[in-house]
Image 1 (tube, helix red, strand yellow):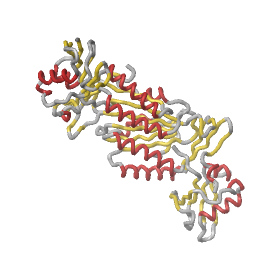
Image 2: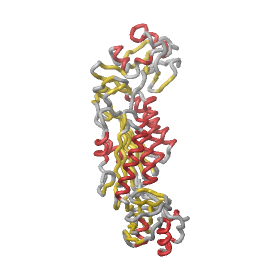
Image 3: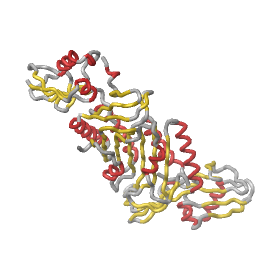
Image 4: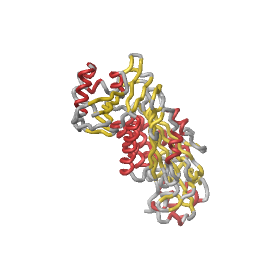
Length: 81
Length: 81
Length: 139
Length: 139
């Protein structure tokens, strides 16, 4: 299934881009995507737990199964205000 | 002794003026002045206890003896803000 | 007069007078003439004060709140005279490095001012006029 | 965008958009870029957001605070992009017939916004730049 992964803030700086188009096996969860990122970017090595996770612009637990066409974003600690 | 009595807000409306110059016996207290006002203005008849009392621009208890040259004011319920 | 004015209040100027580069937040409170009070329609309010004493009380309150919240800078201005619905009667600005103190200080300021500063208001509406707080004050 | 802007915030306009004739008070909160953070000097801040989600979160929070304080009218605007010391990053206005609800609602608004709206800041100072909150987030 296809999932869009958006990068914001520190994650965009680390990834060097705004988004990835992912091809994931059925049943993949945000947590699995986070593990892929940790394997790829050593700056994430210390962050075993994923940050807050948003799917289709709503917060969800990181173990919620993804669906085809979802838009996934990891939300680093927010600092608005 | 001479004491200036200032009128504000509802008391100024009732007295019809800004101030009185009083000639009081030694030892007179704000409470005594209030009694004079009550005797004079029937609108004050129901107000047995004097309002907050200020002497020389400071709040004082109404039984504090007045001194020659004092400036006395009764402070109706305040409503600033 | 430092804390009282007969002119409309310029809140933006009041804000500029207190916010420093080390401040991360400010809270502005404004009291505004509203069109009703205890079920009666209100058209305008006349604010009266014992001016020199009101200035002293304001100064005392600013000192009290400042010593309780030493990181907060405070400005306050109360307007006197005739005000119509929608006009601002009081503006208080509290600024500080962090927001919590500004909220607390601003609230303490208005609570204290309403308690003891010798300022009065006469409400005017279709039913006539009345000094607020007087009728309930009988003993 | 209803709650986010790339332009300087006009707080006076925000105030005008909420205060009604039945309101007797309003509280304006502004977050301002300050010149220090956790001991480091700060010169400017870059605010980034997940814009459509931030709009939704803002809307959700306004709804939550409004249903807790039904007498309060609320407006909020968060600025994004590069801001220098002294510039306003967020303005929240809460107005109501009586003051207590406006203070409470305004405080709840900023607390909630800081908790969940997907907005981030990168601080820039003489020592370089850093995304606030990231370094302490390791597990």
